[in-house]
Image (cartoon, rainbow, N blue to C red; front, side):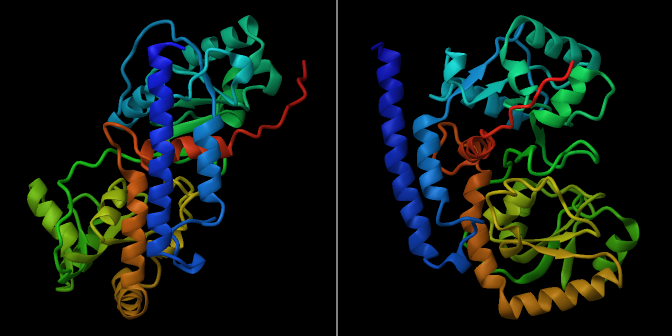
Length: 353
């Protein structure tokens, strides 16, 4: 056994010990199922352990090296290459990773899939259903057969939020962004609700919220320390889905600021939506019927009934949004791997000529 293999084995054993300790800490803090941030609190621990031990991925060799367009894409790709998950034996792989630049034109992506189909047997076995790829903006619907199979069958890992029409729920996965604020401090929440300058963009809504003293709505960017203080000093953080910038939801959770998402439709691409119980860690408010009045009604009730528990669960869930220099159990990288592990059972499609 090579030195590299021994090092990876020791690293895996250490991760398993850390995983056992991390999960025990979560259970100690949240012993009852109703107080867990997870959709399946009883099964996530054994499933994680199985993923660490058995999950294998075959990575196709790209024709040339290339950069990704977002930090989270680059981190995921690098962490995957450096992990113990890749295998050089495709027959042992649960999933196959197809790396290509996010800005690669659709015609070039189609040629890439066509070459995989003609030169190797693995794509044709499932028409790509056991394959996955990174695309920050997502891939739209195209007429080319290769792109149709990639879009409909393969798992897409895209940046959150993904443009409309480019995310298929229950199949695709969202990448959480890389946090950019300092570590949280123990601030006392004195503000009912806060919104960074780009979280809520609709002008009428901004004007209505800004005129109410219970809401702190920024009109221009603040420095990182002020931003961190406002996150930690607010009970709720306001986000407008479909108009504003919603990628800061993970940072709000980390600072104990319960996210309040203003939307009239479901959000299919919420990060880790098949792992986290989002209704327990965030509030969703409709636009119709007077947003400000509805916000004050919902947040007033939530403050009395649920805020502290939602805050605690949100902080516990925020570990899944963290990108660490060396991946740790339950961080962003391993939670993404866990979501891929959940998708390893693929349908063996009958090929139609």
